[in-house]
Length: 342
Ligand code: KG4
Ligand code: ZN
Image (cartoon, rainbow, N blue to C red; front, side, top):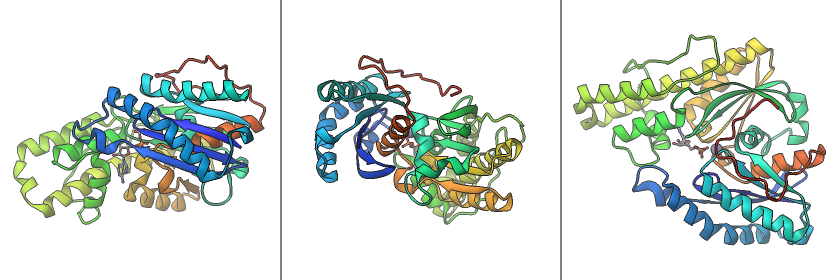
């Protein structure tokens, strides 16, 4: 049984996992707190983590019906993320590990996302090995990357965004349209009733054979489009078409590059995780493209796409089971920790 904490950005989350299963996973989201600023305010996020972490941990342990003395290890995200926010989770976990004389695992946030597709559904995480190698798309508000997972706990970063993340492009485009924060889910919902062919937006780097992404140009073209045709925003039908057209550009790039990388590398499986994996068009188009290309697709359950401690706990448990050496109790947080070859 492991206890895991996640506090890298604006979700305070605690989970208890056991044998590849999640016994409890509570997430206290700060979305409403940051909404009036249109983005995450680090100082507010830190205070909120400080206020909520222990009550969320107590409620999680109670929900799982687990006593602290039953825990085999404590894990926490130690990077990348907001420095002070990371520190709240990491230092709390290290103090608990010290008091309970248990090992501490400091987890890489993106490596944890890599494991989230395996938490819910079948087969379970223990069968991860039968789906290797796979190509994994991690797509959130802060990151967009493709990772080649050669074997369990062994992966290489193939490429990532050179500027904005796909989620940021969704959020900023939505903001330009006057949609509430965070705009990604709002834009997605409106796009469902729009025509994706109504307006033609660029699909950056879609033809480039490398695995990097770029979304800032697309965001800028939405800005210029609305500067030149502000009246579009007065017509709800045209707004829906605009949402569908922007969504289609982003999703086309993500799907094309993911499937191309999988084919090039001979992977038989594709996985996707991170907040943007909630996007309906991304889920649908990835499924269609994988079927056409004979690839197995493992999508993260919608409830686990955004940040959560369950994925941190599941990865820490795999590390424990594989005999990975735990981290020291004074291990520093790593706000800019890159996903390196492992
Ligand atoms: O993984 P996550 O919770 O946090 C980060 O690490 O960033 O992802 C949040 C991002 C936000 O940009 C949000 O707008 C986006 O995921 N998102 C979506 C959808 N649901 C969440 N973007 C597009 N369509 C959605 N349905
Ligand atoms: Zn994340």
